[in-house]
Image (cartoon, rainbow, N blue to C red; front, side, top):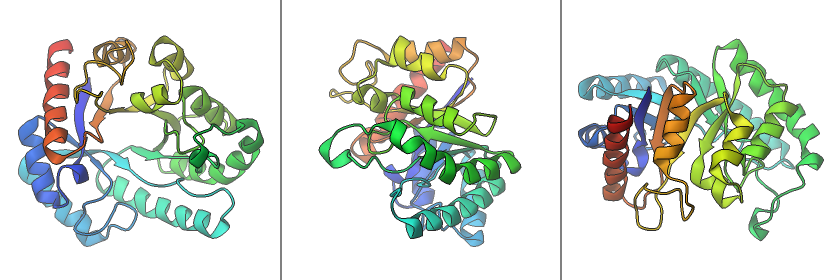
Length: 268
């Protein structure tokens, strides 16, 4: 079963309002990133956690995924990397408090992102393995999943790159793919069948973005539809969240929630 989820901080910076509006539109889960009374998931406090639980209980929602920023840092900046290790520890605390298994993350910025070019991943895999193995091991110890997002500003711009990073990290139950379908396509990869074939069986989360017409009929300007993507995942036994992200405004975010909720209600 796929659950309708949304980045609440793109609906409203007020957590209570964001959850209320999202649930009214059809979401049952929230991807937690920012909008936590002026803080983000990386520095959320115990008081924030208690307040969020009250809000979620009030509207009958839950946190489905932790949308952490962990790993969006430079491979050349050791101090920044160490800060991200600390971020991860706080994210783990929040995940446990919210009974969440999946933590979205990254594996360093793409050093060529300003030139809109992909890196030679072979050059960076040993460093990625060295620096992110501790994070993966911590996730495994805590019974959590570190899900690498397809994001062209990072080393994992496509699912093929995601697969190579996961393999370099040794695979295992604590590593998975957070499939941002549009991002992978924008990275030059056809979502079906090419991209998905790289991560079949290890997708733990999905992001849903709109096309130019502000709907989810197609993945960007491709011929692939989100219905095909979601049906493929359902056929393979995927059970998790699909999150509405970057639709352009709070109103469009809620329109995306309605579209996704209607589609999932029809195909499940």
